[in-house]
Length: 600
Ligand SMILES: Cc1cc2nc3c(=O)[nH]c(=O)nc-3n(C[C@H](O)[C@H](O)[C@H](O)COP(=O)(O)OP(=O)(O)OC[C@H]3O[C@@H](n4cnc5c(N)ncnc54)[C@H](O)[C@@H]3O)c2cc1C
Image (tube, rainbow, N blue to C red; front, top):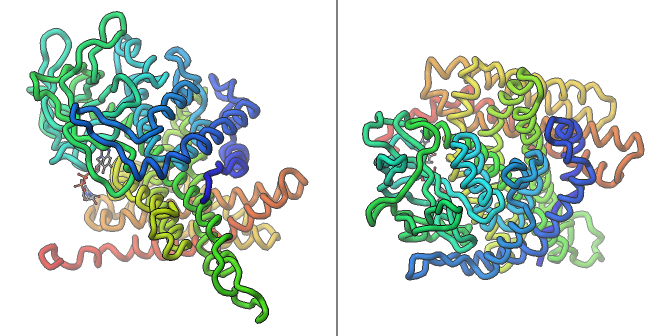
């Protein structure tokens, strides 16, 4: 049986060499993020992931969360105790402001920690993940009184947060939200309606749950411009901060799902017994704008779920491939005995694909996290704006590409196990099942791709997209001009991929306004192309950094050589897909739409 061990060497390499932790730590407010502190945090997190969360992953999957007759939810054995330990250890407030009890560490430091939670037990971590986004939305949009009341217990982890958007008729299209919020004249509202698919909408981790709910006030305009954001606690709060009356929001059922069985996905009924008391956050009719604060955080985190699940699937596949003996590898001596499947070249191809994608996704994620920190904390407004533009471009790529790629990685994890991969007891199947949701929630891949072609590419006439592509091209040129054969090979492939990306950007910019149906037909291949090239960019930078470290005699030589070899594999075996994606973007949309809907 494989045990999860956080890939600390790779995490540290990406943090220091690619995401420039030293620069992030020099931003105002981040003085505590010294290399020693960060190393200690990662080591502690790694222990918690391996010793507490990983052992609960399979048992939680088998047992699942249950709705009890009294309307409460029981999470699987061990989860409540693990959450208590998680909160007591201060993990919930890692990036949150000191004034509310947090530690104000950079997103860059929280990102590898989060990756560990996702890898070890994604279902457990969905509750903290949503709480993090709820805290951000309250911090940025709520009144000082609301912040004082709700943030300290949410930051400490004593209360958790949820995100209530979805209704039966309102999924990707939030304009269709119908939940009603009626003002009571005392500053509060009564909410009526039903929300579905609410992650950790009811649970036993904590005494209280703070629901952030999208709803419409009586005279609100139609569509997304008439949606407001409300805070609805499960238990109302007394003036002294203690818990008061039970609010009128209840879990009426839990969904039966393909994966993440330990995470309770609830149907919540608001107002069946007179109305659920809610408090407006910010101004009326600006709810979707506020909810996007929460969603951007959550979209980034869901992308990192893709990284965590991929790493876990990779580690499990390597462990199995070392143990499983089957046949002789091609080229073995005729007298040789059958050996482990890891010696079969095709198994190596699968393991290298899993490894290379995972390392590339990790690097893209952490570099984006560093930009999130700069966008919030850089001293100069112009720098903050430049980083924000990069983050805005990258969020749908991190979410869309890392989650789609995790499908392939976890699929290969099953394949490496052969028939045993299809049998639950090896654990490979669970990663494959758990991964399936991540391309769907927090906006499907189609929705991420719409965002990428519209708001993130066409809206500024391709300016940000072209600037980032030019940065990739610069790295490609540096690699291609290097006499070192590995770097040179990586550079040539990366240059070709970047040229393919640039053609696709030009086409999207030209087509988005004139032929929106064609642009939308090409949106997902465009997103995949972006992810692939961003991954190649970071793997190219990793190869340069590893080569320079080897030349200086710094660091673990075996690790650095493997890094270069993995980057070369990425360039030679995965990056060539860029041309295919680009051709599909530029030349494929007409055939996507060629057959009328009634003939499909
Ligand atoms: C396990 C789980 C947990 C969840 N947790 C939460 C939660 O905590 N809070 C919450 O509010 N919601 C949650 N959701 C809901 C989730 O966010 C939605 O399921 C998701 O946004 C998709 O909406 P939908 O299911 O209605 O699909 P639909 O919107 O009906 O989409 C169906 C298909 O149509 C495509 N599509 C729809 N519109 C477009 C478009 N404009 N362009 C291109 N393609 C389009 C989609 O990509 C998809 O392939 C959860 C869902 C699940 C299954």
